[in-house]
Length: 66
Image (cartoon, rainbow, N blue to C red; front, side, top):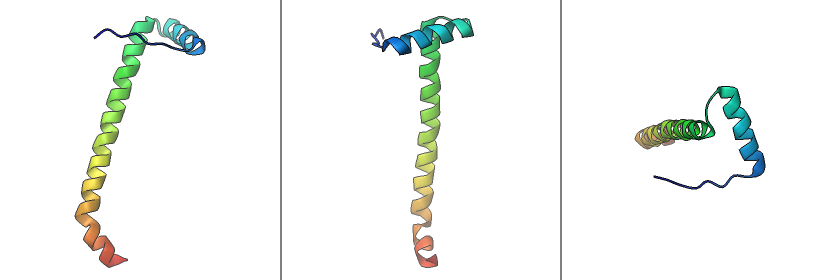
């Protein structure tokens, strides 16, 4: 999928500097950032889902212990 991404000048400048420091293109850096974000939020979603399931499972017991 092709897309246009509009960045503020400061974001664009920071990406160019970071890409140079990392020895990669801005394109590769942005792709890596997207992959990192997707992996991090997927893990957070799993943790949230598990917490909700456990809270529901133990709700009755927790209410009795109050």
